[in-house]
Length: 224
Image 1 (cartoon, one colour):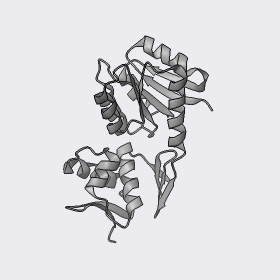
Image 2: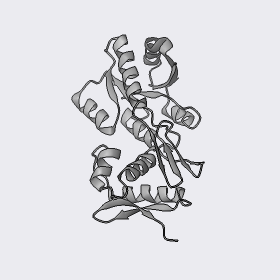
Image 3: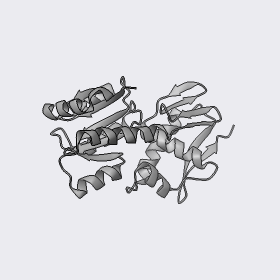
Image 4: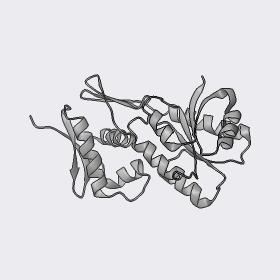
């Protein structure tokens, strides 16, 4: 199988080097401009994404957050690659949720092995969740309500999956922060916004997600 990988880097030379290293194992798609990459996310489904850390349009961290919030993102593994091998850069990358941080100085065979290894692990730990007409395919990262696809952002998909896995128990704010925002401090308004948008997209479902003050969020059957 030839994997589809997106490589985002403002340096044409860096992109050429990565494409050469990845060789025949990957079908590489290169982007020097972040906006060009974000435009194709609605049409192209990648198996993984490789981001440069430092770019003039904005660092890789901000681009990572834009990818997660993009409605076309399919949840594939995201890697950071950089010559900046500082502890701060590594910790921030992994805290955000990147599957790996790769220094540009690693041997070519190690680069390929690390990307392949993370991808295989990622693809092998997915499943399907079904609940009262709702179906979440975590292999394709798609949600269906009564067989009709519902377009969710990646964060909405993670939130919905977490709530379903804990039903009928509530899901605490701490658990949401740990599993969706990787332990970062999350404002109540942020949770309310995602819940509101999610309920709107699932308005024809017989359940809705409610925010319970001091408890977290919980799945409630709508009254008839």
